[in-house]
Image (cartoon, rainbow, N blue to C red; front, side):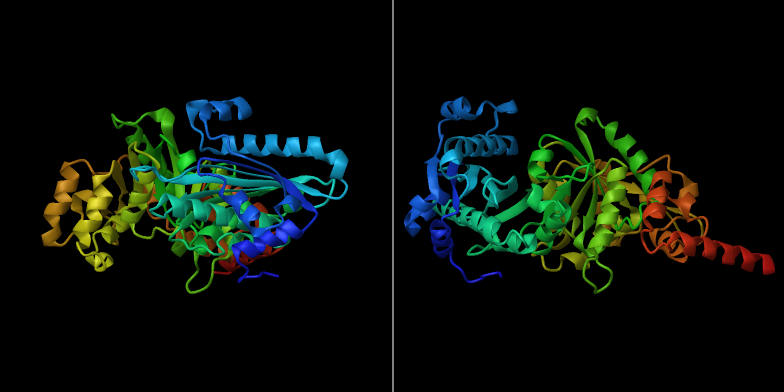
Length: 486
């Protein structure tokens, strides 16, 4: 049962009084804040085998080895810390108390706010632990960004979330959703952001980390989460460090041939830019929370996973975000990388960007949003659309209010917006909604409107409302029979 009002000190004390739980703490970069809570709670000898802080880099390298690139606040460093410390606990204590204890190793590697307050404060936190004596080990790993503007407050928040993690792993492990929620006990999103979580081990075999990441965004613990093309969860700032980001946003239910045409031609133009290094380009398909919802209904988690599976099968990274406005998305991307990025849009999306009603809550209105959207190293690539009369709608005949036309021309002249060229006009009549309706009706021909492997996945798994195989065959026969009777 979730004990929502249980304080940090109470959690630490309960763990100290639980004679089964025993292990070590290794904390680098912001003091030993988590261990300190257990000492202050009383009865720490019942929990703590060892605490340490290899604060000096030379000492840290001597204990855990060096890191590629010389960075210390990375997941690889955290995992080395966890594995080494856990192995030491097991090696030194298993004979003496292994039959009665569930061992753990807690670790974090953190960079807190410096004296000048000029750095980004973030860290990796994790727990390797047993749930039964002599049993297998599990891991829960998170990445956090600290938002307090004082070093002391950041250290306090790190201690709280560390206690929450240990308590959650031992007392809420049967409900990973509750465990996730409990990480923010005694904290607010104004103080700390959790932008990645990963559960692993035999006791979490049924946990889908993509759903856990979705819940991070839904619960407001972070504004975005990222998956690799293999479906594994990634920490955005680490995965996209020194990368060129090329991103397409949409509902993608399902992705169609027109999306593939947009991506291939847009990517070709992006790679042709003088300041883009092809070896550092990553392609991301982005799904916003708004695009994951069906009307007023909550997000269908199976539908979400289906879309992710399909996009990953095409080799895409996938991001889910709460950045509905493009200028907020660009501000976020600019925080992840300093290299040039590109956004792939349809002309209706560009039309929406120029709608001033979206920026009424900003003091500077559309100019304030554009200052963020276009002052970064980001370029918009616009895919044209067909108009009802069959003509092509692009930047060349883009409709914009007269008082905004000089602004639009400025962006064109300064190479901030560019039409996607060499598009396939045969695909331009395809819309996601029409393909989705064809799939739901089991109507023949939809397969030709999506990539071949996407059609295969949809058929094999009966996705997006596609009738099951027997119903599908019957539907096709009925359609053919109806056509024959005409």
